[in-house]
Image (cartoon, rainbow, N blue to C red; front, top):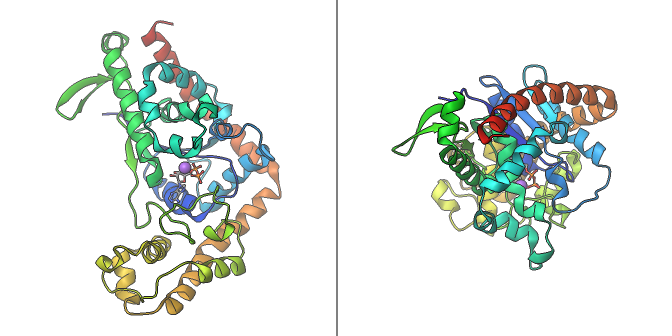
Length: 350
Ligand code: ADP
Ligand code: NA
């Protein structure tokens, strides 16, 4: 089988929030003990919705700072910026020719982000999942820790890998760089692995604090809807105290959270921050009112986030350190990506 490799990316757009932390960055940290990991600031993705944004270099550094402040070791693993490795864009072009327009049109994130005026969305926004597939597969990565919102894109990544593998079977065999795998019952001589999404945990999708049916997002106009990694203790406390709930107290069993998205979300956040299950949290707080639970959640959130916030701002105070890490990570990533691309070009016949 393919040697295990973890890859994931975060866009340098706006402030990182608790959803990004629990859905992605926290998992990155947990995975590094037993895996080879590559964590990417995906700046090429960040221009799909809007070409120009404020202080892109600063935003790129701040994602790298969040990775490091959260505990990722940039020497043992690779932290880098996507545009430093042009092979991502090269493979994305090839994948644009592998993927079908119909596959892209079905992506719910495209529909959400393009809105009503789809004719005016950028072609890049439509092709976004093809670049995401290239980000992962240019390293032939096998495992991708992400939030639940990325599940559909990862299925598409598998579809792209599968079609490439099947269309180029003979050429892959001839090059001698393929690996025999089975997909379902089907034996395939694969150049690209079938990536495994890692979406588990008590809060796979962190929801807005104002509306339990919408995901917590950078693009939500209400700052009260999300906890940002840069928020201070007082701000975190205010946002959690104002978080929407329902009139009932906390149930003692997980089943009691059904149909109560706001309660479910707060319990999920607590469980994820405490690294425990929702059942364990309810065994402790079941029967209590939110007036008891919310202060406990504030204390926990501040305990977890304050050291990260502090370290991020310390790192941002001396950009030369972060820039050196990104430069070194970029060099190491480029070497790996070029190994793949040399083989891909040969498979295709370029
Ligand atoms: P955003 O969706 O806020 O623009 P990105 O697209 O850069 O952020 O996503 C970075 C990572 O954070 C991805 O793995 C994504 O799945 C995860 N993520 C984003 N929002 C949430 C959320 N509300 N809950 C859980 N994970 C999330
Ligand atoms: Na996202």
